[in-house]
Image 1 (cartoon, rainbow, N blue to C red):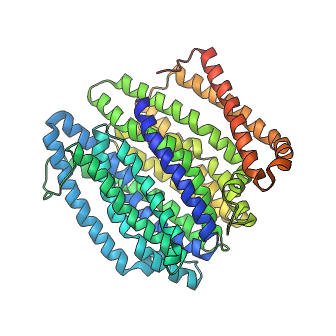
Image 2 (cartoon, rainbow, N blue to C red):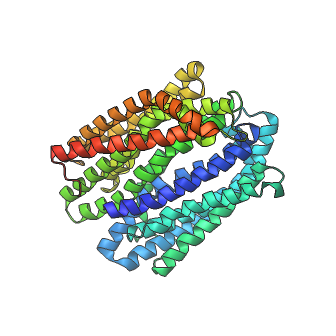
Image 3 (cartoon, rainbow, N blue to C red):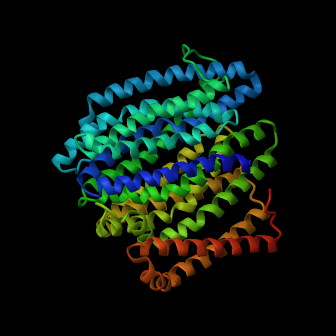
Length: 506
C-alpha cells in the first residue's frame, strides 16, 4: 500500500510543485488586486460544483459500488455500470453548463455579492470562460475512479499537472488577451480537455475505458445513488462553508479574496500530496479487505495510512504556524505581490494550518465508513463541523477579519474528524494499534523540536545570511531553516520510533 500512496503522492507532489509555479506566475501577473479577486471568483465557481458532484462524493459512492460488482459479478457487470453512469454524468453536466452560462451573473452575485461593479462585471465574463472546465473534470473524475479501482493511479494523480501547465502557458501569453484574467480563465478551460484526454488514453490502453450506455436499473445503479445522495449533501456542506468564506471576503477590503486563495494554495500542498493521496489508495484497499472478511487487515492498513500522513504533514503545519510571513515572503513577494499582500496571506495561512492535521487524516478516517458503504454517518458528522464553522465565522469576522474565516474553518475541521473517529471506535470500524500511538507520540516530539528551531533560529539565521544573500535573504533563510528543521524532525521521529520498537518498514 505504501508504494501506491507514494506513487499517487509523487504525482501529486509534481502537481503541487507545478501549482506553486502557477501561483508564482499568478502572483506576479495578477497581484492581489481587483483582477485577481475577479479571477479567484471565476475559478472557485466551477471548482465548488466539481467538489460537490465529483471527487470525494462521487468516489465514495462509485469506487465501493464498482469494486463490489467486480468482486461479486465480474468485470463485465462493473463495466456496464460504469458505462451507464458515464451517460448520466454527461447529460447532467451538460444541463448544468447550459444553466450556468445563462445565469452567470446570478451565480457570481450569489458567491460574491460584495464585489465592486467593475470587478463583478469582469468576474462574470471570466466565469463564462472557466465553467466548461466543470464538464470535462467531472468525466475525468469518473474515469479516474475506474482506474483507481483497477489499481491504476498515476494518470489520475498526474492530470492536475496539466491544469497548472496550461494556466502558466496562458499567463505567459497574457499579452494576447484583453487582460491577464482572461488568459488565466482560458488556461483553466483548456486544461479540462487535456486532463480528460490523459485519463481516457490510460483507461483505453488498459481496456477499461467506460463508454456511454443507456442508463437502466440494475447493475448497482440503485446502490450507487443510495450512497451518492448523502455523499453529495456532505460535499455540498463543505462547499457551502467555502461559499460563506467567499461571500464574506467579497465584502471585506480589496485583497481579502486573494489572501484566502494564496494561503489556501500553500495549505493545500501537504493536504493534496499526503492526505488525499493516502485516502485515494486506502478506500479501495479497505473495501477489498472488508469484502473479503479481513477486518483486521483493513484496520491495519488504516493505521499505517494515518501514521504516514501525520508524520509527513505535521512539520508543514508547524512551519505554517511559526513562519508564515517568511514562507509567503520568500515564495511570493515579487511583481504585483507586495508586503501588504504577504502579511494578509501569512495571517490566513497560520490560521488554516491549525486544521492541517485534521484535514490530512479526514480521508483516511472516512474510509472506515465508505468502505462499509455507509455514507450517512460522515454526512452527519460533517454537518456538525459545518455548523461550528459557520457559527464561528459570524462571531470572528468582526474582530479578526479574513483571518477569522480561516480560524473557523480550522475548528470546524477538527470537530468533524473527532466526531467521526469517536463513532468509528464505538462501532468497531477502527482499531488503533500500539504502534500507531507510539508513532503519534514520536511525531509530537519531533514537532516540538521543529517549533523551537523555527522560533529561536530565524533571527540568527537571517543575521548570518543577510550580508551574503542580499535581496534573496528570505528565500535563503527559508531554505536553511527548512533543511535544518527536516534533519532535526527526522532524527527525533525516527530515533523515537526505533527506541519504541515501532517497525519502520510495514
